Image (cartoon, rainbow, N blue to C red; front, side):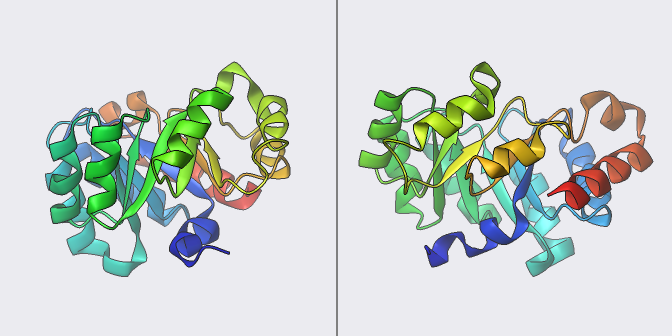
Length: 207
């Protein structure tokens, strides 16, 4: 077992936050943690993501496994690391971006969908391959990938919901990334923190 992935294996569910603001990302994190989901990925599509990450770290410390996602520029990797991120996620596998992520020393997750893209991600040094968008193939597709890639830690993102959560884990993933099905944009905008907490409880129980 890769010790670098111990926290990821323990948490199993990563909440992918594409929040309308840093403040709402912080507030959504409070609700997620209250519901039992403690792995949080704040995406760079969120305004001021590093501010959100730093504040979440300040409030929760080791009580949260915090990362930065949608890394599409090399400089974002260092900015996220400086803010206190513990893992970094990119939707693709671009050499310059992968190098910047790996240079931080943090757990690095590179995106891929096809077998060729997975081979690229692994060759670049990914700790985890983010299968994205996983909704295109579903758990059966990921199970097929296990044939040529039996030892590659996989994290499907996109299309993960309560109805298929167990199927993903049965397919042998290290963790799943859950976005709108877990923490909806509408709930964040309206401040419906109870529904986010309830959703987190449901995901946490089902894992």
